[in-house]
Length: 542
Ligand code: LR7
Ligand code: MN
Image (cartoon, rainbow, N blue to C red; front, side):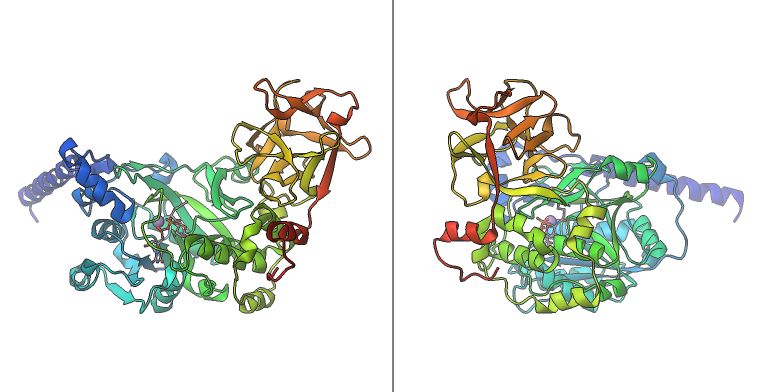
């Protein structure tokens, strides 16, 4: 090619790119900006919101291939990954997903992944009822640059069994699961696959960025939080602890070892997925599978990481738009019971004592999953708590799990259903767990779930604050002989007091040996709690 021609081409390319980019920077939602709906359309917008529990009107206004900001850490942008990476199938399951979010997910995969790394995209339709997800979708995806396969579940099966079906049909060396309302960002895939290439038994998650359900604004997720869970077995984000920062020598671009994953977005070696027991096919609709898989991976010799150089956005919703056949509570409790029974050993009592109602739910047969645990020679849950999640909300070692009763008033500490920053109350002891269950831990915290008894000054009210593991105001010393609970930092004793607002509560006061400062820590047994709650001998499977 002669020079003039070359220049011409360069200029044309430049003009074209500028056009594309300027289009990209101006349309609604481009560069991940929020979409504003004019006043006149607000009523309509609210109506449409109900369909998917996100702003469907906003989503429909945004280009299917909208541009996004590059939110990666600087150190990630220059990382070089091996040429020979394993390829991946991308499995996306959906039930009644919106057209625009589903296809934006697909486009973001196609447009932001090197095609030689994409084996295929598999869409698993979990018995959706919307017409546009039938032929229209099938015809549409035929024209895309990457093979897209659509699998239909014969009946509503839930995301767990739908993913199993997608996985079984996949051909890639790796399976990457995504929710149906995601947006992958530049460079999302290579760091995930590179990590699996290095270490086949490592299951990897991107940082999950936030796509607003109200306006589809794109906000970077944090590399300083990782996955945990509370006594109720809800997945929660918690700050990455110092020990994990130290292990990575402060390099935030290195993967974070995470105790659990959110569940929707991760990559796993396809054979390893099989080896480690895929998913528990006995779980219905939604929930629990993410903790089940997290525990299983760690306990059975794998590892779970957040690869901080990979960012994928997800539309977080405040409510679920779809039905849970059988009832939401029933389904989630059943799934949680299955994971507690198979993986948590005696620590499942924390779950049962804080929400005893769940034992009413039949969890079916878990013998196959227990056999899997045997065959894989998986480690006990105590090992997981000790080695993988020492800052867990469920304490690895503890002195008591039960009520804390005052000798004088014969009432019990009670969080009254309020926790964050609220005063801890006193209430008639009911023995039913729930709001009256506290654990005095080997770390000398008095905690219920992820909240700790905390007080900042002598005579100050004792409140519940997120446990911080930094000792300080959350450190208590129980003396089983004098029955006093000493607050180390103030050297005061836990005391039943009338608070300034007239309510019965607790403070720390100068120790005087009186009965208002004497406490009995009593362990509950699960059986006793269940009897109290249901007044009947047990016909529940415990
Ligand atoms: O019956 C169903 N069938 C389905 O195919 C119910 C759901 N689904 C599909 C659904 O269309 C969606 O694509 O399954 C996917 C996940 O369902 P969501 O988006 O309603 O779930 P979520 O984002 O609220 O929930 C998180 O926890 C779930 C527990 O079962 C799954 O693991 C989700 O994948 C998971 N999502 C994420 O991890 C994204 C980050 C959220 C956080 C924290
Ligand atoms: Mn989701």
